[in-house]
Length: 148
Image (cartoon, helix red, strand yellow):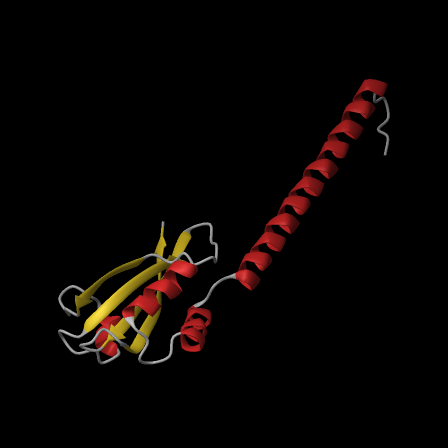
């Protein structure tokens, strides 16, 4: 569209401005597409509580020794804590909700969830419930998040 009495320089300037707008919106659309693709990939490949539970159930049957549990965690580069008696004043609700009695031996493990979020960090906590001989009787797995 030309305006009567408009100079050539003015027409070029308007055309350049319009061209910059197309480039800007094109780059924004490309950035959104890339972000959406990455988010979908992260969600599809994320480690979930159910994944961890099924991995434990497949590889650590009831009666597994503490050494077997630690070897299992080490092979997956999951750090483990010490064997400690359960104290409801120290641990939160998950073990209490699972019916773990005070004084029951537990072995803790903690891993970062591979799911990503711009504002939150996700973690998976694992508590292995042990009998008096240090053998696996059960496990409790839960997820926590820390958001900005």
